Image (cartoon, rainbow, N blue to C red; front, side):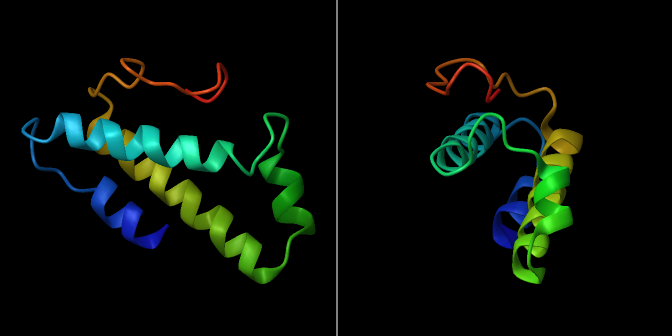
Length: 86
């Protein structure tokens, strides 16, 4: 997650929008394979181990950094995600 956070937070203009879209969609698709749709981050953090809590923190940094720098990227195009993932 730390590497994805660094890459997803890069501000390089719109030259790589397609690649950033694939990065984001691919990351969410992978997460959706092991996190149920009714997964509660708050409960997981409250009851999680230190390692699980670090993962949740890193996930939050990835999502917020990506959205801050790439909110203009159209994520829904060609996304084969479960309905509630995007």
